[in-house]
Structure formats: structure tokens, C-alpha cells
Figure 1 (cartoon, rainbow, N blue to C red):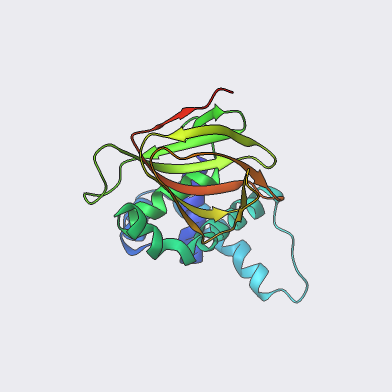
Figure 2 (spheres, rainbow, N blue to C red; figure 1 turned 90 degrees about the vertical axis):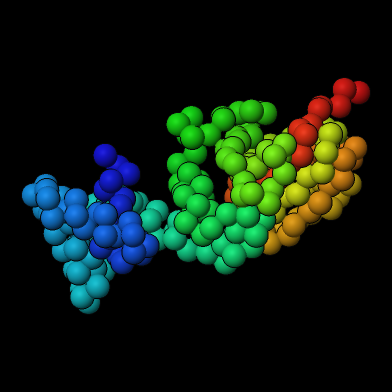
Amino acid sequence: MPDHDNKLIEYALGILDEKTAETLQAEIDSSAQNKSALRDIEHVLTLLAESEQPLAPSQNLRERIMQSVQHETRFTGFLDRLCIFFDLNQESIKEHLSTLNHVSAEAWQLNAFPGTHLYHFEGGTQIAENADCGLVYVEPGKMIAAHRHLGDEWSFILQGQMKEVNGAVYHPGDCIHRPAGSVHALQSVGEKPLVFAAVLIEGLEFVVD
């Protein structure tokens, strides 16, 4: 149960929200296995904090700890803007962002376009009913071919770099509006995958030369 293990690590690090922490505490109190796992995690974290010479935890535990910390901090600076962008509260935004920890077919539409994965969800009440809200993950070097927007689109860059065919390059924090009828293509450039939030009205159609 890797997701449950990650929650135990986040609990030990003190980075869970209050409601989730209370729920998990009840699960820990009712399970000897959970208590034992939590003690092991806390022991490793204590050794790491107190040792004069760095101790190396197991690779698996290290990856899980780092993943938990990185997820908590990676997009923190964008939370308020994403709440406005999607008209959702912070807990909802954090839940959607958590799917970026492991982009898989369980939550994502993989290779909707070559090297491009999509995660869909509903926006808040202030978002148009015909809007498609979600996250877009484009692997480094991959492109989304030329397409026409049938309605307005807003994109908010979270990670990586987006390069348009006209040479414009967008970076994390940039928000781009494309009006209905506009045509463009884009590429993920740089070492990190391109990740952006999107609100798309009426969909799009690919342009055939």
C-alpha cells in the first residue's frame, strides 16, 4: 500500500492537513501494524536529524520521503492562483496536484497525444459548464501539433518551459489566454517535463496541412 505508506511518512514529517492527520491518527491507533510502521519511520527520521555523519536510509524509504516533501513544496507558491484559476479550494487543488507524484493510467489519460498526458476534473461553480479543466503533462522534447481552439483557452504554466511555433517561450507562473479560433502548436523544451493547468472551452480540433 504505497499511498498509505506515503501518508505515514507525511504524518511523521508533520505536513498533512489537520483533517487528514486526525483521520490517519485514528487508523494508527487502531492498528498495531500502522503503529510499528510509524515507529520505524520516526526512528529513521530521528537518526537522520541527530547523526553527525549523514546516515543513508534505504533507497525505497529515501525516495518516499523525498517524494512527500517535494510534492508538498513543489507548487506551494501557485496554490492561491490555482484556486482562483479553477475556482476550487486549496484541499481540492492539492489533491489534483498529488496525481503528479505518479502519472499513471489510474488517474491520467496517457498519451492522449504522443508524449502528452491529460488529467481531467471539474472546476468550481464560476467556471463555465462547457469547460474542460485539468492538468497537462508533456514529456521533454514532445510537441502538441497545430490545433484550433473552438472556444477560449487559459493555460497556467507550473513546471518546465512551453515554446510556441512563433518562438515565444513561457515559464512557470506565466498565464496565457488563447481566444476562440486561434491556431497554435507548442513544444516542451528544457530538461523537465512541461506541466500546465488548463481551462478549455468547447474543445479543439487539429489542423491538417
